Image (tube, rainbow, N blue to C red; front, side):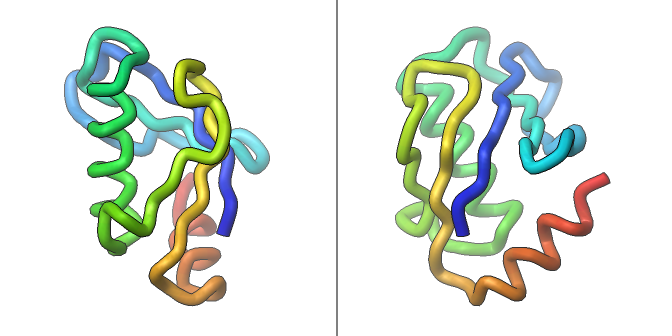
Length: 87
C-alpha cells in the first residue's frame, strides 16, 4: 500500500493525529526534518501498522514534510482497515 504522510515535527510524542483526505498527519518528537526524523517516522509507522521496520519505505520526500510511503508486510485489506480507523 502506498500512502502520503504529512510529518509535524516537535510533537510531545509520536502519534497519528488525523487524516485529511488521503494524507495521514503524523507528529514526531524530533525538532526538524532530518535522517533522524525519517528514522523515528519509520519506527513509529512500523509499530502503528504492525509491520517490520524494513517493510516501510520512503519513496519520495525524504527531506520534505510531505512524504510518499510504501508499506508492505500485511495484506492490502488489513492495511486499509488500519487506515480507516484513523479519524
